[in-house]
Amino acid sequence: MVEATPGNPPLGDARFDQRPLLDDPFDLVVADGHPLAGRDRVDLADAAHEPWIAPCRRARAGRT
Image (cartoon, rainbow, N blue to C red):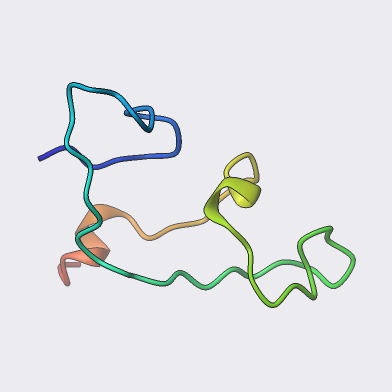
């Protein structure tokens, strides 16, 4: 199993049989004046080049 990221592996890469396993929504928080603010939907590709703040792996696993 390979965790796909935008562009890796590329869509249509014959070496991989790509199938969605989960529909796991993310919440996006941006300032009022940000170009992505006010949208009803933002694709991951639209936010891919933005700075991200995410929990570390230990926090996601429930460990401190």
